[in-house]
Picture 1 (spheres, rainbow, N blue to C red):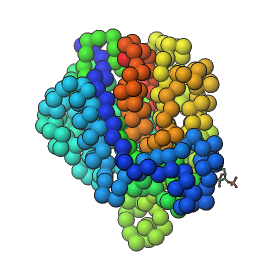
Picture 2: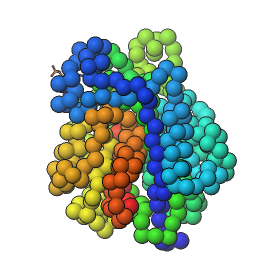
Picture 3: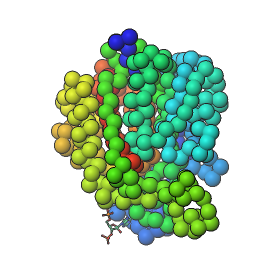
Picture 4: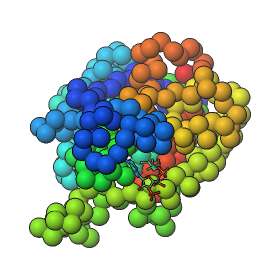
Length: 328
Ligand code: COA
């Protein structure tokens, strides 16, 4: 039991077909390709159609991950979905996915930790596997943020994109898999990134709609200031827990919030550019979808070698932050 590790057996992703470029955004709000590129590193992002919801992407990502893992949906005993843009408040998107992929033996639930959702998910899955409570887990991270993005607000609409990623975690008696996770939160900064209405505090009303309270509100600059330090400390903490140091990291696969944040963290930890995986230029900030999408790209591009050390990190609404170390 002690030696059980949660190993990633398969990965998958699914993104909308529609591309929204910086040039498109120049026609919608007062912004420029130059501002967006230099401040964030984003060139384009994917945007869902009006009739598409999170589960449409989650199902495809899950099936791709199952195919790669070579396991049947009936073998899954837990479906976890990290998101702030579920199909609806309830039932959970986890249950919708569980049914549609035929994971008939699985329990399913959604949870949210903003952009840190996937790291929280790795931590949750790790506990279930180490305790013996689950053997095969489908962990999905994804968002359809365009549905809660205010396309009149240039400070947020240039940042976010839609997309979903998934991994299959399996209990294995090997030295490979999740070596450590570290998760944190500080609700004193809860108003840094929020969607104020639609819950029990401000239920939907004509007023809430007129005041545009069903959209993301973000104090970007304040968030930026705390992000780098917290991400750095979480990375150091998870590496220490895994008895590793920064030099052991082959791939740093961070939440893609802002290329300047990624570079600042890399500089503090002494990682060269070839250690960083960056796809924010093509997909923008997909919150909980960000890391599993990036991971699937790395895996399917054949970039990983056996025993490579991967470090994931994220920071987001809550505020939440965290990091995880995986031996491939
Ligand atoms: N186009 C052009 N100008 C813009 C703009 C846009 N899309 N958005 C904001 N600006 C302007 C601002 O109005 C401000 O103008 P002013 O100086 O005349 O007041 C100026 O650009 C600088 O704004 P600021 O908010 O200080 O920019 P920034 O360098 O902090 O970059 C973010 C903004 C959002 C890109 C950056 O703060 C960020 O990435 N924050 C972290 C977000 C994050 O990690 N969230 C957690 C995960 S979701």
